Image (cartoon, rainbow over all chains, first blue to last red):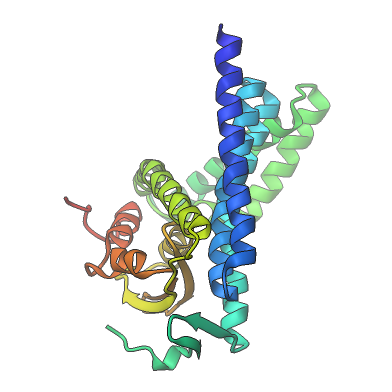
Length: 115
Length: 175
Protein backbone atom coordinates (compact mmCIF):
# COMPACT_ATOMS: atom_id res chain seq x y z
CA UNK A 1 0.00 0.00 0.00
CA UNK A 2 2.66 2.47 1.07
CA UNK A 3 4.75 1.46 -1.93
CA UNK A 4 1.85 2.26 -4.26
CA UNK A 5 1.27 5.69 -2.65
CA UNK A 6 4.98 6.43 -2.91
CA UNK A 7 4.99 5.48 -6.55
CA UNK A 8 1.91 7.61 -7.22
CA UNK A 9 3.46 10.70 -5.60
CA UNK A 10 6.67 10.10 -7.56
CA UNK A 11 4.77 9.87 -10.84
CA UNK A 12 2.78 13.04 -10.10
CA UNK A 13 5.94 14.99 -9.23
CA UNK A 14 7.79 13.73 -12.31
CA UNK A 15 4.86 14.63 -14.57
CA UNK A 16 4.54 18.11 -13.03
CA UNK A 17 8.29 18.63 -13.40
CA UNK A 18 8.31 17.60 -17.04
CA UNK A 19 5.26 19.80 -17.73
CA UNK A 20 7.13 22.86 -16.43
CA UNK A 21 10.29 21.91 -18.35
CA UNK A 22 8.29 21.56 -21.58
CA UNK A 23 6.51 24.87 -20.93
CA UNK A 24 9.88 26.55 -20.36
CA UNK A 25 11.35 25.13 -23.56
CA UNK A 26 8.28 26.21 -25.55
CA UNK A 27 8.62 29.66 -24.03
CA UNK A 28 12.22 29.95 -25.22
CA UNK A 29 10.99 29.33 -28.76
CA UNK A 30 7.82 31.44 -28.67
CA UNK A 31 8.80 34.61 -26.79
CA UNK A 32 10.06 37.53 -28.88
CA UNK A 33 13.27 38.79 -27.22
CA UNK A 34 16.12 37.90 -24.86
CA UNK A 35 14.50 39.34 -21.77
CA UNK A 36 11.16 37.59 -21.98
CA UNK A 37 12.87 34.37 -23.06
CA UNK A 38 14.84 34.43 -19.83
CA UNK A 39 11.53 34.52 -17.93
CA UNK A 40 10.63 31.17 -19.45
CA UNK A 41 14.11 29.68 -19.25
CA UNK A 42 14.96 30.75 -15.72
CA UNK A 43 11.80 30.09 -13.82
CA UNK A 44 10.32 27.00 -15.42
CA UNK A 45 13.67 25.23 -15.42
CA UNK A 46 14.29 25.91 -11.74
CA UNK A 47 10.91 24.58 -10.62
CA UNK A 48 10.78 21.75 -13.15
CA UNK A 49 14.19 20.43 -12.15
CA UNK A 50 13.47 20.66 -8.44
CA UNK A 51 10.08 18.93 -8.78
CA UNK A 52 11.69 16.06 -10.66
CA UNK A 53 14.45 15.77 -8.06
CA UNK A 54 11.79 15.82 -5.31
CA UNK A 55 10.13 12.91 -7.10
CA UNK A 56 13.45 11.01 -7.02
CA UNK A 57 13.82 11.80 -3.31
CA UNK A 58 10.42 10.30 -2.55
CA UNK A 59 11.12 7.25 -4.72
CA UNK A 60 14.48 6.71 -2.99
CA UNK A 61 13.30 7.12 0.61
CA UNK A 62 15.42 8.84 3.24
CA UNK A 63 19.08 7.88 2.92
CA UNK A 64 22.41 9.43 1.90
CA UNK A 65 21.49 9.60 -1.78
CA UNK A 66 18.26 11.49 -1.14
CA UNK A 67 20.07 13.93 1.17
CA UNK A 68 22.44 14.69 -1.70
CA UNK A 69 19.44 15.20 -3.99
CA UNK A 70 17.92 17.63 -1.46
CA UNK A 71 21.23 19.54 -1.40
CA UNK A 72 21.14 19.74 -5.21
CA UNK A 73 17.61 21.20 -5.03
CA UNK A 74 18.83 23.84 -2.57
CA UNK A 75 21.79 24.82 -4.74
CA UNK A 76 19.64 25.00 -7.89
CA UNK A 77 17.36 27.43 -6.07
CA UNK A 78 20.31 29.66 -5.19
CA UNK A 79 22.21 29.53 -8.47
CA UNK A 80 19.30 29.57 -10.96
CA UNK A 81 18.33 33.22 -10.42
CA UNK A 82 21.98 34.31 -10.33
CA UNK A 83 22.58 32.82 -13.79
CA UNK A 84 19.42 34.48 -15.16
CA UNK A 85 20.51 37.79 -13.66
CA UNK A 86 23.98 37.49 -15.21
CA UNK A 87 22.53 36.94 -18.71
CA UNK A 88 20.02 39.80 -18.33
CA UNK A 89 22.76 42.18 -17.18
CA UNK A 90 24.99 41.19 -20.07
CA UNK A 91 22.11 41.88 -22.49
CA UNK A 92 21.35 45.28 -20.89
CA UNK A 93 24.99 46.34 -20.84
CA UNK A 94 25.52 45.47 -24.49
CA UNK A 95 22.50 47.60 -25.44
CA UNK A 96 20.23 44.79 -26.55
CA UNK A 97 16.82 46.03 -27.69
CA UNK A 98 13.69 45.12 -25.75
CA UNK A 99 10.40 44.02 -27.29
CA UNK A 100 7.34 45.94 -26.05
CA UNK A 101 3.76 46.17 -27.28
CA UNK A 102 4.63 49.42 -29.12
CA UNK A 103 7.72 48.00 -30.79
CA UNK A 104 11.43 47.47 -30.17
CA UNK A 105 12.98 49.83 -27.65
CA UNK A 106 16.41 50.38 -26.15
CA UNK A 107 16.44 50.67 -22.36
CA UNK A 108 18.85 52.92 -20.51
CA UNK A 109 19.10 53.15 -16.76
CA UNK A 110 19.43 56.95 -16.81
CA UNK A 111 16.07 57.44 -18.53
CA UNK A 112 14.12 55.77 -15.71
CA UNK A 113 12.56 58.14 -13.21
CA UNK A 114 13.39 57.41 -9.58
CA UNK A 115 10.43 57.23 -7.28
CA UNK B 1 30.89 38.94 24.91
CA UNK B 2 33.38 40.92 22.81
CA UNK B 3 34.58 40.72 19.25
CA UNK B 4 36.70 37.66 20.14
CA UNK B 5 33.65 35.79 21.39
CA UNK B 6 31.76 36.53 18.18
CA UNK B 7 34.70 35.21 16.19
CA UNK B 8 34.80 31.98 18.20
CA UNK B 9 31.05 31.48 17.76
CA UNK B 10 31.27 32.13 14.03
CA UNK B 11 34.20 29.71 13.69
CA UNK B 12 32.39 27.02 15.67
CA UNK B 13 29.14 27.23 13.69
CA UNK B 14 30.90 27.19 10.31
CA UNK B 15 33.09 24.26 11.38
CA UNK B 16 30.09 22.22 12.54
CA UNK B 17 28.13 22.99 9.36
CA UNK B 18 31.05 22.11 7.08
CA UNK B 19 31.83 18.90 8.99
CA UNK B 20 28.19 17.78 8.79
CA UNK B 21 28.28 18.50 5.06
CA UNK B 22 31.45 16.40 4.75
CA UNK B 23 29.95 13.43 6.61
CA UNK B 24 26.70 13.56 4.64
CA UNK B 25 28.59 13.66 1.35
CA UNK B 26 31.21 11.00 2.13
CA UNK B 27 28.86 8.59 3.95
CA UNK B 28 31.84 6.75 5.49
CA UNK B 29 32.61 6.62 9.19
CA UNK B 30 36.12 5.14 9.20
CA UNK B 31 38.73 7.03 11.21
CA UNK B 32 40.76 8.03 8.15
CA UNK B 33 37.85 9.81 6.43
CA UNK B 34 36.61 11.40 9.64
CA UNK B 35 40.04 12.87 10.44
CA UNK B 36 40.49 14.10 6.87
CA UNK B 37 37.13 15.83 7.24
CA UNK B 38 38.20 17.52 10.47
CA UNK B 39 41.35 18.92 8.85
CA UNK B 40 39.61 20.14 5.69
CA UNK B 41 36.59 21.68 7.36
CA UNK B 42 38.69 23.39 10.01
CA UNK B 43 40.98 24.91 7.38
CA UNK B 44 38.03 26.15 5.31
CA UNK B 45 36.12 27.38 8.37
CA UNK B 46 39.21 29.26 9.59
CA UNK B 47 39.59 31.11 6.29
CA UNK B 48 35.95 31.79 5.42
CA UNK B 49 34.00 31.88 8.71
CA UNK B 50 33.44 35.64 8.52
CA UNK B 51 31.58 35.25 5.23
CA UNK B 52 29.60 32.19 6.30
CA UNK B 53 28.45 33.49 9.71
CA UNK B 54 28.70 37.30 10.09
CA UNK B 55 30.44 38.56 13.23
CA UNK B 56 27.31 39.50 15.16
CA UNK B 57 25.67 38.48 18.41
CA UNK B 58 24.69 34.78 18.38
CA UNK B 59 21.13 35.83 19.23
CA UNK B 60 20.91 37.93 16.05
CA UNK B 61 22.40 35.14 13.91
CA UNK B 62 19.90 32.56 15.24
CA UNK B 63 17.00 34.98 14.80
CA UNK B 64 17.98 35.61 11.19
CA UNK B 65 18.31 31.87 10.53
CA UNK B 66 14.88 31.10 12.01
CA UNK B 67 13.18 33.95 10.14
CA UNK B 68 14.86 32.88 6.90
CA UNK B 69 13.56 29.32 7.35
CA UNK B 70 10.06 30.75 7.87
CA UNK B 71 10.46 32.91 4.75
CA UNK B 72 11.22 29.91 2.50
CA UNK B 73 7.68 28.36 2.51
CA UNK B 74 6.13 31.70 1.51
CA UNK B 75 8.74 32.07 -1.24
CA UNK B 76 8.08 28.54 -2.46
CA UNK B 77 4.36 29.27 -2.72
CA UNK B 78 5.16 32.40 -4.76
CA UNK B 79 7.49 30.40 -7.01
CA UNK B 80 4.74 27.92 -7.84
CA UNK B 81 2.37 30.81 -8.66
CA UNK B 82 5.13 32.31 -10.85
CA UNK B 83 5.59 29.14 -12.79
CA UNK B 84 1.89 28.60 -13.38
CA UNK B 85 1.63 32.22 -14.56
CA UNK B 86 4.57 31.93 -16.98
CA UNK B 87 3.39 28.52 -18.22
CA UNK B 88 -0.07 29.98 -18.84
CA UNK B 89 1.39 32.88 -20.84
CA UNK B 90 3.58 30.52 -22.87
CA UNK B 91 0.81 28.09 -23.74
CA UNK B 92 -1.89 30.72 -24.41
CA UNK B 93 -2.41 30.95 -28.20
CA UNK B 94 -2.32 34.78 -28.20
CA UNK B 95 0.66 35.00 -25.82
CA UNK B 96 -0.60 37.86 -23.57
CA UNK B 97 2.70 39.54 -22.70
CA UNK B 98 3.50 43.24 -22.31
CA UNK B 99 7.15 43.55 -21.18
CA UNK B 100 8.19 46.65 -19.24
CA UNK B 101 11.09 47.66 -16.99
CA UNK B 102 10.12 49.35 -13.73
CA UNK B 103 12.06 50.73 -10.79
CA UNK B 104 11.11 50.87 -7.13
CA UNK B 105 12.83 51.72 -3.84
CA UNK B 106 13.21 48.83 -1.40
CA UNK B 107 14.54 50.58 1.77
CA UNK B 108 17.01 47.71 2.30
CA UNK B 109 20.52 48.51 3.53
CA UNK B 110 22.86 45.49 3.56
CA UNK B 111 24.23 43.71 0.50
CA UNK B 112 23.02 40.34 1.76
CA UNK B 113 19.39 41.43 2.03
CA UNK B 114 19.51 43.09 -1.40
CA UNK B 115 20.92 39.89 -2.90
CA UNK B 116 18.17 37.84 -1.27
CA UNK B 117 15.48 40.19 -2.54
CA UNK B 118 17.01 40.21 -6.03
CA UNK B 119 17.03 36.41 -6.15
CA UNK B 120 13.48 36.22 -4.77
CA UNK B 121 12.22 38.69 -7.37
CA UNK B 122 13.83 36.70 -10.16
CA UNK B 123 12.07 33.56 -8.92
CA UNK B 124 8.56 35.03 -8.53
CA UNK B 125 5.69 35.99 -10.90
CA UNK B 126 6.96 37.27 -14.25
CA UNK B 127 9.73 39.47 -12.85
CA UNK B 128 13.52 39.48 -13.24
CA UNK B 129 15.94 41.78 -11.44
CA UNK B 130 17.94 43.78 -13.97
CA UNK B 131 20.02 46.02 -11.73
CA UNK B 132 20.30 47.23 -8.13
CA UNK B 133 21.57 50.64 -7.04
CA UNK B 134 23.63 50.94 -3.84
CA UNK B 135 20.80 53.01 -2.27
CA UNK B 136 18.40 50.07 -2.60
CA UNK B 137 16.61 51.00 -5.83
CA UNK B 138 15.67 47.93 -7.85
CA UNK B 139 15.25 47.82 -11.64
CA UNK B 140 12.95 44.96 -12.58
CA UNK B 141 11.93 43.54 -15.96
CA UNK B 142 8.25 42.51 -15.83
CA UNK B 143 6.56 40.19 -18.30
CA UNK B 144 3.14 41.90 -17.93
CA UNK B 145 1.22 44.55 -16.01
CA UNK B 146 -0.05 42.40 -13.11
CA UNK B 147 3.34 41.31 -11.70
CA UNK B 148 4.52 44.92 -11.96
CA UNK B 149 1.61 46.07 -9.83
CA UNK B 150 2.52 43.46 -7.22
CA UNK B 151 5.84 45.27 -6.76
CA UNK B 152 4.63 48.86 -7.23
CA UNK B 153 1.46 48.78 -5.13
CA UNK B 154 3.19 49.88 -1.92
CA UNK B 155 6.52 51.32 -0.78
CA UNK B 156 8.26 49.15 0.24
CA UNK B 157 6.41 46.25 -1.38
CA UNK B 158 5.38 43.04 0.41
CA UNK B 159 8.40 41.02 -0.66
CA UNK B 160 10.91 43.75 0.30
CA UNK B 161 9.24 44.08 3.70
CA UNK B 162 9.45 40.35 4.30
CA UNK B 163 13.13 40.21 3.31
CA UNK B 164 13.87 43.29 5.45
CA UNK B 165 12.18 41.58 8.39
CA UNK B 166 14.33 38.48 7.93
CA UNK B 167 17.51 40.58 8.24
CA UNK B 168 16.12 42.82 10.99
CA UNK B 169 16.04 45.98 8.84
CA UNK B 170 12.29 46.58 8.49
CA UNK B 171 9.16 46.00 10.53
CA UNK B 172 7.10 42.84 10.20
CA UNK B 173 4.70 42.67 7.21
CA UNK B 174 1.10 43.19 8.40
CA UNK B 175 -2.13 42.24 6.61
